[in-house]
Image 1: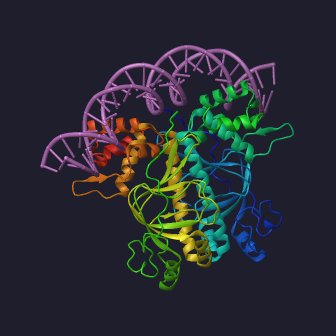
Image 2 (image 1 turned 90 degrees about the vertical axis):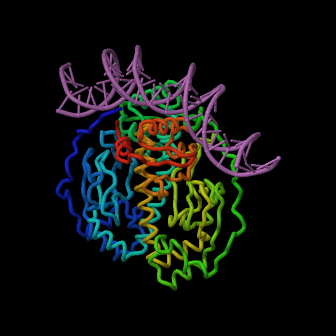
Image 3 (image 1 turned 45 degrees about the vertical axis):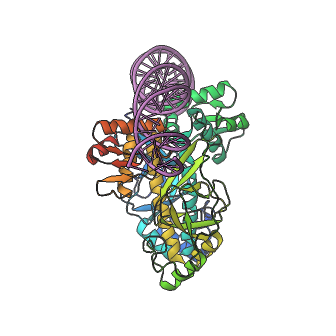
Length: 247
Length: 247
DNA sequence: CGGACATTTGATACTTTTCAATATTCGTGG
DNA sequence: CCACGAATATTGAAAAGTATCAAATGTCCG
């Protein structure tokens, strides 16, 4: 049984990297994709007065598992992980979130999982109480939040099939295709993974060695190409697709 | 790799076992626990006119994975499973729902998982389109739906930790305690499980033999008692609790 | 260019799955 | 009410897949 404790740079949230009273939304890159989309100018302005912009460095944790739910946020950019752990330090990543996603637990006292930046990231952070109140007064916002939560639930349940029923090979293949869909490749077709091998293992419910072996094997058979620690090129997506089930 | 196809009595939904235009809500046993709670009499009446009561027999499937999302429903009584499968027949149960729970995918075109009755069950069934419209016009209902979906998501994510990181013993112990919390024991302290060994395995992401072996071992050590196929008595809940993590 | 850290690779151990009987449960009909 | 039989569950033995432990190699940052 693995006993791993992450002693990484888990510094607490810094004291407001940059507040943005008023100036935030007009030039916000996710304003048309986050839950704020659909609010009229006045409402969005009101919402922006509740929130503040915060910058995170890779490794920083914003919310802790089992902690009070004091804040919620929109992700402006960067990638973050949602994670839960057993008492003896085994970790399971239960979600990876990207720009325009919503994080935190509205309408509830506790955050059931931790939220940690995988890359440098920027958030639009709201005190939960104020956000809850605002959402209650704005049906459209609440509707978008519901839509998003329903989608999250669907995706999470699909991932349960992977965790409970897929082999190591299928897990890794599914993961790589998922990353290919979510992240943009550079000119050479290389994707820069925001997760280390350990974190990939924590997403897939397996170990770092197993992930490594599967990737090496896929490289050997020409399905993918590995470049450096974080780079992957999906050489043959069709073959990769085939590996996601049976084989 | 397991190749199992359930040829069980998967008859289609019967043509309205019992419609309930108007008479439904007054004496509904879940009216104060389902999402309808909080609606005033007029609104609840309006909602009831959209829905109809349906009786299901154990084994019947109401919604299919990947199928059109045409209906949603409240569970009046009984237990149902939500499941997804791989193309080659491996199944993962992604949720078990009980009286007062809500099922189906509102505000979406497809049902991402199947819904099948584990016991005889009664539903209050709504055409999705009508339900969506009603929910959009009733913020309170939508809020309760959001609350419920957020709770579902939290529970689902907690289960991911079990699927990805727990051992067979921990899985079975966690499952039994969960059933103990949700189901009421009879006078002898015996719980009647709504799931077969195979279904338990499908919930836990393991096999029928492993579930059986773990339970037998727990019986041998006096932690639980097995009575018949479906009966369990949680003799020593504290010991069971201890088995849910490490040990 | 050195060195810390991440990843890969190798060998072995262990848990769980798989395959194969055997036993039990429980509904049905005599 | 008991006997039968199909479905379900348990048990056993062997095989497979992963995890674990240990070492070597590679990467990237000062």
